Structure formats: structure tokens, C-alpha cells
Length: 217
Image (tube, rainbow, N blue to C red):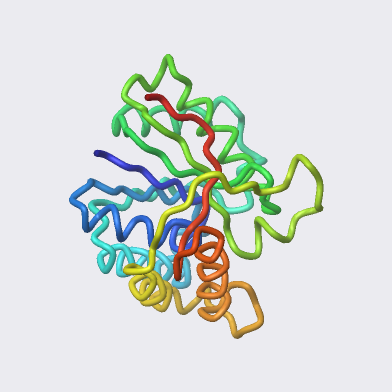
């Protein structure tokens, strides 16, 4: 199968789908990561973050990394039609069977706008091969927004990543510019703690949790 993981920012995909991507890659599926935003392309930090992403993806066996290079924290300044067109063009070209997207209730406005645009691109009329859409949680985004029924992340799908947790942690180590010290949620300890918590929910050592947005059987 062809699987696309949409990440508003570098490292979101590791935090939310890292273990699942490693598992699917090992199973022989074609996994592609779509990195949506970036800062000034001439900035050394931006180029470093891209190198970190590519290195982490290589470790997990990701088939390809697509950098859309849309403005970080600047999507709100773009015309809706332009953002939608960018996503529609990519999804039409890739024609994925499974897509992982951020959670609509995340704190960062880029996450919310990415969800709006990708759901337009993945309308059933535009994506006949699509079998499933899953929303993932992102540490320091999903749990930090204003608590409300609209923002809550309610897991309905779990992936056992017991055999992939080390790969997920090692992949995150590549993102040195993004990592923080515990107890910050974007720390290696917090990443492992969340995986343990999600795993205990299904009586596994480690897991990643998702919300099912659409499934076609």
C-alpha cells in the first residue's frame, strides 16, 4: 500500500506516527512523508532541520520526503484556494491508500489549517483509491490546546509499536534542534512515556494512538 503522512512541521510525523511508519516500512509498504511548512529557505537552521528530517526518515525506511515549503506560521496569510490547490495537486499525484493527518484540535494554527486543506484534497470524489484517514496526536500541541469537546483527542485506533519504539526514539534523536529536556513533552522521556500509556490501554508495552476520520471497506 501507499501511505502518506502529512506533517505541518519537521518532527511532527516522528512524534505522532514514528513507530507506525517504521512498522509499515518493515512490512514492505511505501511510506511517504509530506512536510508542509518551512522557514526562510536560506536560513541555516531551516536547512539543518530538513537534513535532520531526511536522516530520521532514512532510518525508518521512508520511501520519499516531500517538502512543500509553505510559510511556517504563515499559512493564515495565504489564500484558502492556494493552500487547497497545493494539497490537491500532491494528493492527486500520489494517490495514497492511507493518509495520516494532524489532529484538528491541536493548538498550533498551522496544524488546524493543514487539516482543513488536506480534507478538501481527500474528498471521496478526488481520492478514489483512499481506504482510510487517521488523525495522530502531537506532543505539546494536542494536549496543550484549550480543553473543549471540539479539541479533545479521542483515540479509536491503536498500533502496537513494541518492536519499533527504539527506532522511533532513535529517529527523534536526529531532530537535535527540536528536542528538549524532560519534563518538556518534546523530550525522549516524554515520547516513551506516551507510548507506554497508549500501550497499556491495549495491554501492550508500547503503542501509538489515532482517531479514525474515514475508513472504506
